[in-house]
Length: 279
Length: 266
Image 1 (cartoon, chains in turn yellow, orange):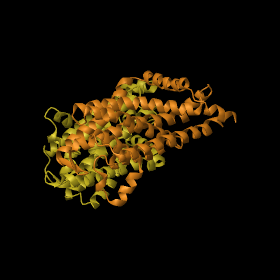
Image 2 (cartoon, rainbow over the protein chains, first blue to last red; image 1 turned 30 degrees about the vertical axis):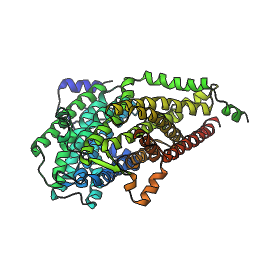
Image 3 (cartoon, each protein chain N blue to C red; image 1 turned 45 degrees about the horizontal axis):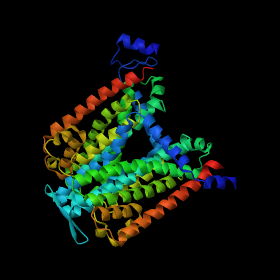
Image 4 (cartoon, each protein chain N blue to C red; image 1 turned 120 degrees about the vertical axis):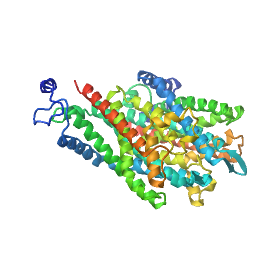
């Protein structure tokens, strides 16, 4: 604690890390990778369980809606419903995996496991903890999405060479969902707030974010709600990539929005982590 | 001999005490009424998104020679799903936590309350919670004109039966669960039931082999029963659905109580 306070008052923010003298600010690549490694080691023991939810569920949605309900729908915006829904499901998989990895796990590492407190007892700094966590989410998101992608490609749902950008788009959606959720999880006092986050945030985003039907179908009052959610921007980008058509808004606007949410979320997460790790 | 005698006695007051404990616990959490309320919101959101949003793309659906708006087809299914989820939320993760980690049932068994009373009390609580959701959902369906008021009244006890059946089955499964990763498999199974039990598309349109598989699973019968009543077309088939759910309730309860007895009284 004394070193931390000394580091903060000395104002060495942004400096390269010095062994044995962890400052309050700044980030080190080695420490961030060490945090990532810790997440990966834990994941190695649990991946079988999470594998089911991270790609079986999206594939069931594709089968149930794309093939099942799609049979009664025919075409939407000029493509088969199956091909239309797949990019939405890919983006929402990224979104869900990212939120899933940053709610209970982050809260648990503060409250039950106290892993972050343990990390702070080493040269790992707050920014390294946040960066390592986000890197892990990025890996989780991209690996789940690639599996869904491979299977849906077999259904003929990927229609454009731009579909190669899928990991990039989904990674961006994942970060834009993970950063603010991490900040939220670091702030709340009780895990029942996550039930509320899912019911009033994640589930509505998935149901009304353009995954199952075009957002233009929503009443004009409700549309801005979809525009605020990072998922909708991801769905638009992903749909443009897999179908090769231009999205409704310029690509740069969607990308800029997702980056802005990621940046703001990371800033809030850093602040929340610093506060909570003070004890 | 002693254990069996204790286990067989069932008293309403002791079952009530198990329920009362759950009420107290729920009220001790933050924002408990918001959490309760949110359980009702989820199927409503599905109804708005899939029933109304996707429904606009689907148009009308013809089922058994009748033409229905898609929302009228999906709404009863969401009602059945709501009854299922409401019951399962209590009798799976919560039940498992109390049994394995919190040792609640060990503590309860140190009182005059027996295993069957615990099972019935937990199931009763799940039913109360689930029924609040389904009653509210039926009011919304009536307001949307998706069910006639009298048929809504008839559908309510059917949703209670659905809750009983899934609550009992959930409790039985919880006594077999080894750890949290098993719940992931349970979630996937629950989600598969949710998608493929004639909820979003008529089961008659599936390939014959898949139809048989679906007809063995419980949510198909729950959706069948609730939909028959909501659409005002009950028949002999509805009785078959109800019988399936009643058998599931009895079997689930008996299994859960006997496992609890074995796990906790040894």
